[in-house]
Image 1: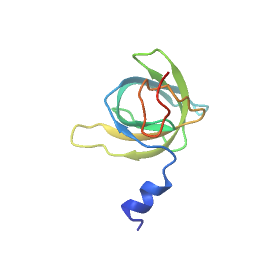
Image 2: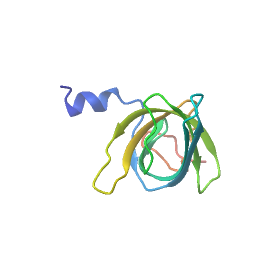
Image 3: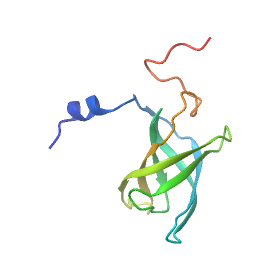
Length: 114
């Protein structure tokens, strides 16, 4: 089993804990539709951990719509945990084409805004 230190060293970007409202949706080729309001648990430039009431499949392509900024990004589901006691799932997603300012947050190691 990997140590916590080894897992942290494999990450491409630092994570920040934050609760940002997001809308997740998809129209999968097999007919499975996904449309839900979710909330982030933590975010990085390259992805997010979401809390949602739906359970997408690992590898599913979804669109993540930032409810505050109105911006969207296409993602791939890489992890699913749950459901928890509240009936919700934790879903890890990887953003296909990350943008430095998608989340509207300053990450450690980023250059200071001008």
